[in-house]
Image (cartoon, rainbow, N blue to C red):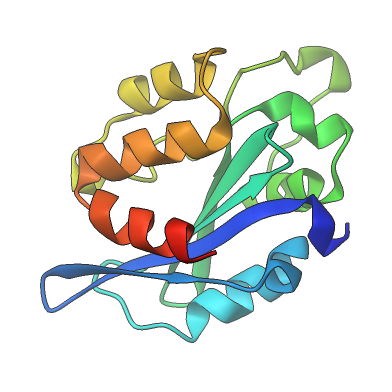
Length: 158
């Protein structure tokens, strides 16, 4: 996968009770190995989240906590067309039959934000909303969890 396919890549974490966000270079977000390595370099109370938007089609969230990665993909059908989504499926440990994948059906660790107040059902509803682009879905997640301003600042700067 090339960096031109990456719409945005952002790391978000908490430090001393405050949310912080930083843009990640698109080249880092072209593979799950590089993405998780970059996230491991950042501090974070409760881990570090990596958000990657891919060509207005889907997003991936990775949560790196103490050398262990959890992940979810906003649209499981992306696994069929995108190497990054396929790599994320490996991180998740998904063994999905191609016939089981449906458009706008999120896959992976849907409880990835649960300890920050966003449960599986609400995350699923956001991901299934066909009227929202991936960046809008992530902005809704950020608003719900409380890092909306930090995310806006990073996305505006890019």
